[in-house]
Length: 359
Ligand SMILES: Nc1nc2c(ncn2[C@@H]2O[C@H](COP(=O)(O)OP(=O)(O)OP(=O)(O)O)[C@@H](O)[C@H]2O)c(=O)[nH]1
Ligand SMILES: [Mg+2]
Image 1: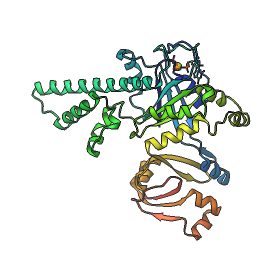
Image 2: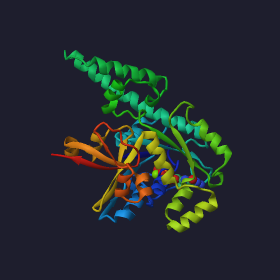
Image 3: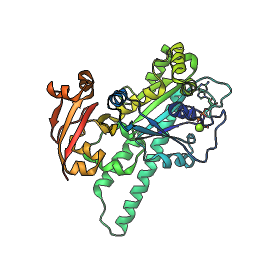
Image 4: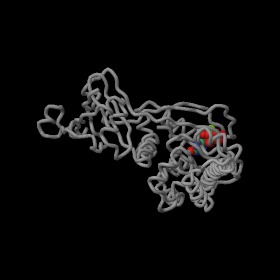
């Protein structure tokens, strides 16, 4: 999974990136001129994988991973500048929008003063502009081929017009309604405002846990929107990410932070994208695999190898919690917790699966 960290200049994107990845890229009080994006891959913490690895003692333990990308900030109204960012991130699975809510005189604000609501709105507007531009380009191309006497794709044209109509009313595509066929047809278009988003409200360290911040957070996304807002202090989280685990735990307790940014954001990303993990376990490897909720067993097998999908016979599954409670496969089998499932079985989060196949 690939997630872009974006936002206005100096909102704390690189600080967030460092907090998530444990890396230590330069953060600056003036807006940076970055040539190359920062890219970092993080393991998705998963206690089930830890438990299984301690039982099987496998040669290899593989966690699910997320790739984070951090690049230059967006500039309100400068589409040419923003295109550099958007071209880089148009294939990501989700967008984290960093919105500044911390007070700090020494850090320049591109808009002159603090305004989280305004800034969150500006980010949305830039995503919408980018999508409108994409639509105009495609419509022009369709018109061009019509002129040359080629048959045009009327369905695509209608869909583009429908998207444009909503975007012109400033409704991001992710909040518009589309049929499953339309969603399918839009997949290759890489619209940005269609991507699931998470608003990360970057607050002052003194505001951690404050009621005022929760109220502010609630105003940042439309009430009926699926987007989530996560308030956190990127600066503090970055310090935490650089500490050894025990010290980090102590520091978090003192500050009243229950869970590190990395875990909170990963949970929100999985929920927002409708993702779950299934597990495979053995003495060679214990591994977590990320799939969409509702994926059927045969399709999920294809994550591991296309041969297993093609030659699928059945899936032997047990819920990880059931397995850990019984302690071993034989016991789980005896209790009927270890089941044989067919190709249409929808895998559940935390299922341990052994695929039987034949090629
Ligand atoms: N007080 C405070 N300062 C912060 C916080 N997060 C970031 N900063 C500071 O704000 C400045 C900008 O942070 P960066 O992470 O470089 O911001 P950015 O969005 O990556 O900036 P550009 O890449 O230049 O657009 C740095 O001086 C950070 O130390 C925070 O939560 N609290
Ligand atoms: Mg930066």
